[in-house]
Length: 53
Image 1: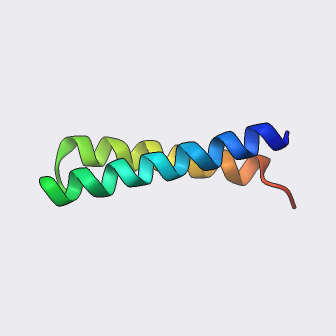
Image 2: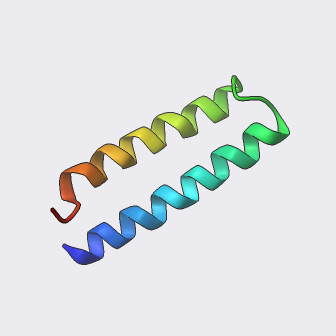
Image 3: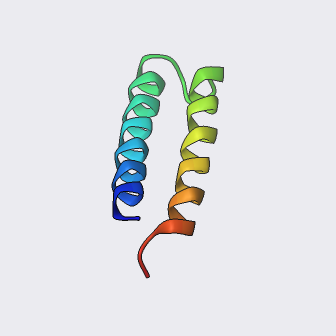
């Protein structure tokens, strides 16, 4: 379980970084930024399920 949590945290940070970098180069309304935001939301929801209590 700990490996899954760590993997999710890495994915969350990477997705967040990509989203911010892309948004700074284009705009927050860019379709790719919105897609990354949706992916980040999904990752955060997964983390809420598996995070240690």
